[in-house]
Length: 623
Image (tube, rainbow, N blue to C red):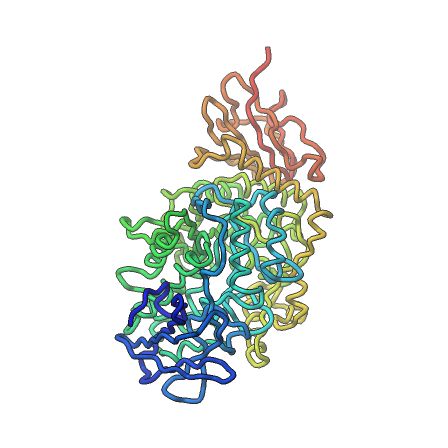
């Protein structure tokens, strides 16, 4: 008998009758679900079309643990679509009833693609406890800071005691390391109650190397037609790819339906290979929108080659996503902050024009020659909105890639850091902070992964080889100091010290004030801001936002020394009619540890303070 299902595969409770188990194993003749006892009990599944097997097993309830036996062989395997792995990826799966959780967010409308302030966080290091419950205690702090959207690093279960999550193997099972699936749901419910959206980082480009049993059910989950950086490529367009596509598309909708998430972040989409007419990223985007049942959703992608078709609508040949991570902005900013442009920073100089162009056009490379890769990089983006690009000074990768996990503020002067923080948070792009950035966290964020000893050794060596692209990290003395990803101390050192939120009050005030300006200033908060920019000096530039009736805003950023413009032949510096510029906000405010800000537009023409950002507003002239 066929029963209506929420997912095409997995274990689903059929009210009052038991649990229906369904799995895709096209090369098997027999599939049996084995229920843990005592005593253990096997139950044969019935063969369906297209390689599926299914059966309703009576009297089974939530909490029952189970595995699959294939063709009568002795080995037992967890469910490929397990909703929970209480003993980890190598253990049994557990039947979960998602309807048992009582939600309180019926009035929640979701997340508009514009106007968001994103906060990337790793649940395992966000608090000393590393759980959903502990993370939820900090949600009021994030709300008060001005965050609107939480981006959770991957939670699909993976082996070991700690990890970043990008080697997940149970794509439907939130890792047991952070709590139960209902703990995750409760976290989302509490976030919504505070007005915070939640999206999840998902990995659809590969599956982790340890605990991955998909091939035992079918080798067609993977393909050798494409070269993947992290293992076997997923089969989205080859023979028998239909059920594979269904599996991943269902996973995208699952997080939205069963956890009330507000969208997804798609990891390394350049490694999702699909030559189908209907690209799988377009298909899963449609599924996310459908699963949201009228709530607004936000889908963002990481895409190293900078393919803008991901955010273009279907009628333009696009996939319909909302935003793209903008590494170009980050790379320019880090060069400006540190003075170094080694390795993948080679093609950036951190100049004023780069920042103006990033504000206006998003990607800096939209098809030009890119010397680091010895090829052209990027596709046209001149017509896209700034909101289509997520800008950041830090993210998990970039902090860890500094070798010692150093934060941006630790690699530059206080003035420059505050000035570029102002550009990030007042700029037109969608800004993103990495956990602890708002209070200048001093702990490192390192690469950590608890693999078995043999794999751990390979991962450590691979990580060190990757970092050798930086000349300083290639030195033998430096290589000897790099943290071992498998060392528990590497993980523990990466946990936030929340006492710094009080001790670093000046930095927290800086971020909160900037985000309040972004939220409350009528000119800065325009959904489609009108603005332009101009270079004012070797390290100085301005962005002018145009408001109604001359109510403009002028953001001055100077990353160099004090600059006197004895002549100022730049129209963007001219005040609106019958007005003069007055300081609205300054990174040199005493609240942030600064030294104060004299008037910029004086009788001696313009004087720009060094290593500072100042926001100006017009004030009517007095007679």
